[in-house]
Length: 330
Image (tube, rainbow, N blue to C red; front, side, top):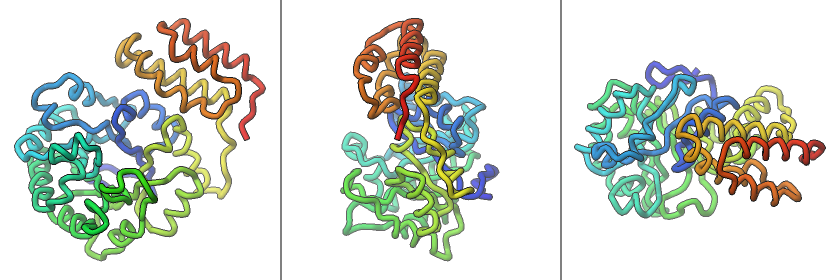
């Protein structure tokens, strides 16, 4: 069993990574249904929260069926992070996660996300501000360092643990790499094997198959794995990994019925959350992933991304079910 504060997770938990414009409540609900053990909100700007920005506030929505669930915040100002910690605590997530890993230019330019890796003293002060503002467990997601010449994850891990951080998720790339090249988990393993480190260490980066998940579990000895892009359009990956770890056998690939069911649920839950029009509009970008690689699907994909009312979309799903009833995935 893995513990983060009072949160009890199974041995070798599978975490859903916080992903901008992806990890919203409908998507999280799908991943929870298919085996995710711990999930996080999209990352939320501390500055946006204290300005009461509508988009930032909407990201605070969490539901009991998701638990345990964390809300992730980012920022580069101690006062804003402290205030955000209090605001987030009021909606009662199970934990608060701090993003010190986002490599995107618009975040880094504000001295937040992965930019904080260049100043570990600042990282410590920002983290202390969040911890001081809440009674919830505080965790961190970060990267190996700013670039190959400044990999400092060993120092980061020790100093964060020393001030009370209760778990650390590490993406196996530097900020300079963005998402290019391969994630190097050897640095993550070194942190995990450090006798001073007692908090859970979760590995992240390039986990895109059940085989790789189990291989990395055994090779690098991490406490769990955080999965991001591989779950987009494929929420089944969580239960597939668990089944493979337990039996050494792979689940059959999701059928067309499974994919239609996932897309239909995603749409339904999005409409329940944000209303019909917004739910329809925001789900459109997901259909390509649910129905990736299917021959002769273009006509139906076009329908899914252009129809603008729920009844017609549900009819389109029924049409797809009939037209592809005998379709088999290799």
